[in-house]
Amino acid sequence: MSLRLGTFNIENLMTRFDFSGWRNQLRQDRVLRLFEVGSKQEYEQLEQARLIAETDDTRQLSALAIADADADILCLQEVDNIPALQAFEYGYLYRMVGNGYLQKFLVEGNDGRGIDVAVLMRDETRSGQKIEVLDVRSHAMLTYQDLDLFNDELALTSRPTDKIFKRDCLELDLKIGDKRLSLYVVHFKSMSNARDNKDGRIGTMALRIAEAKAVRHIIEKRFGTENTGRMNFAICGDMNDYQERVKVIGTRRTGYRFEPVTEEMSALDVFSHDDFAHNVMTRRGVMDRWTLYHARGPEEQHLCQLDYLWLSPALAEHNPAAVPDVIRNGQPFRTIFPPGQEVERYPRIGWDRPKASDHCPVVVEINLP
Image (tube, rainbow, N blue to C red):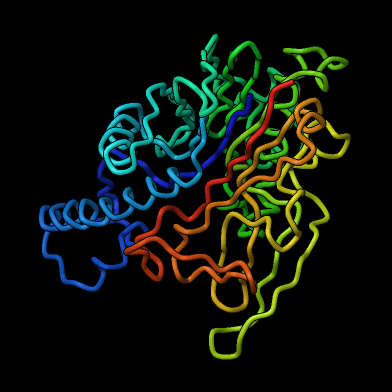
């Protein structure tokens, strides 16, 4: 009996229009800045037309990436609400490629933009095992003081009563056939809006470390510290941090070279340092673990893994040959691939957009002990 488990930051699956760019040019789409817009009403009409036209291509590409991942259970990030999920699943994923996910779960979390974590599930695995949801729990209301996590670093930006998770840690208890699996779906704090214009990743590190510690606390409290390693659990999602990256050096004219770099510190060390959980992506080559291309001009380019499927020691040991797939066909053409990793892009992919997402879906096929 096998199960395909995946995660995908689908990037702004929204049901709402954002008109804040009328007053704040930093939030205004670049194409509208090319035109003279005489009034707020005219701006809103143009923004609606632009977004509707762009979204159809984007969601077709998102659906193709999800279809290629072919997950039985798919954890999603950046979903507006259940109606958005239903409209996308029926209007794009099911109608276009025939992949139906009738079970859908989302709990409104803490994100100021309203982007939440969610889960899509089939009724049965591809091998015919029934997927049952026994319980769903949100941990969005946990505060730093609840778990005694507040410290001097957090005090620079936060209060003891602030919520730990910037979105949520959505916990699902599942029964797959006659086996049990506990799933923890997260979307950690982004590497932006750092205090005093510090390096974005370092400046927000304390917030992600607290989130990782909170996830670990939830799991250890649930199973007991001594028993945790023997349980079937997975931590999935966009964790907005990396323990290593691949520097991309060069330009289109001069060519590129690629240099792997190991980071001295990461929030994800909370999971890995004592084998609390196993990042199955490390079973791929060091140059081939990335799920996102980041660039701010030729001086700042790298490939990194932001999207994770952390397996419990029991699951990792039971599946020693399980190597995750990374679906990169929905990446825009601006993404720079190391030699030998190039893929055929989906139809209508653009230089920067449309694209399936800025992230790549990750999926692994496992057996439950």
